[in-house]
Image 1 (cartoon, rainbow, N blue to C red):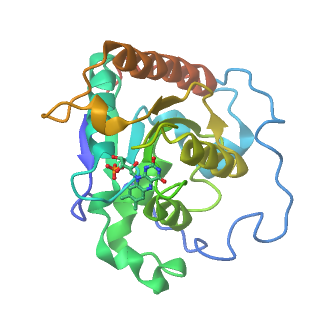
Image 2 (tube, rainbow, N blue to C red; image 1 turned 180 degrees about the horizontal axis):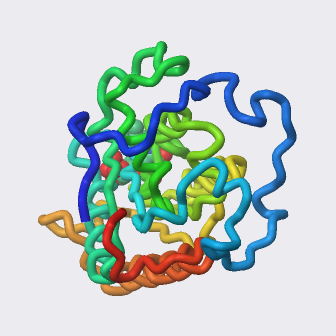
Length: 250
Ligand SMILES: Cc1cc2nc3c(=O)[nH]c(=O)nc-3n(C[C@H](O)[C@H](O)[C@H](O)COP(=O)(O)O)c2cc1C
């Protein structure tokens, strides 16, 4: 288990000069197939999905990347993400954490649409070099936090989400438990041809769910997070033809 949040983390992929606005098949006007229309048979290294083998190295990586979907200091999202980290550790599944609170300030320059700062590379590479993505998102104003959508907009297109399994946890102060942002994220990731894991977890009235140490106390909710993680690992293993449990991060 390790965390990626600083500019000091080494880049793991070579730079792609075609990245940025106007790059990618759709932006050049080429139609893309729908994520839901494609076959969902398990894949193996000797029978890879063409698009995946072209645009990413999913078969060489065995790590789940968890995205903490806000940069608010002291956020409850980070506290819930800690539980998710622990659950993956119990399952002996390599997991890395991308905490949006640790995004480099340079990424917020308008020039970043055209040219990403080097300090963002560890973040974008951590998405590209992942077997699957877990997003933990709060609800802000009935939707996805602006910083999470901006982070998505900064990622390489189209390979960041293409054929990448994705799973969602939502939390909110309100009674709907972030249903709205999670469904917005499913629409965004679906648009970007991710493989959506259908079992979502919603945590309503989150302030009441956490004790003074910021820990979830309800065994029922912890059970839901565990069931989701277990199911998602199975989903990724079958889709990608890899073994995640007991794997060394690569
Ligand atoms: C800018 C902002 C907007 C928010 N909007 C909503 C909302 O629309 N619905 C809701 O249930 N909670 C809303 N909340 C409360 C969050 O859901 C709550 O803070 C929760 O702890 C998750 O966010 P956190 O990770 O920032 O702590 C909002 C919080 C902030 C900071």
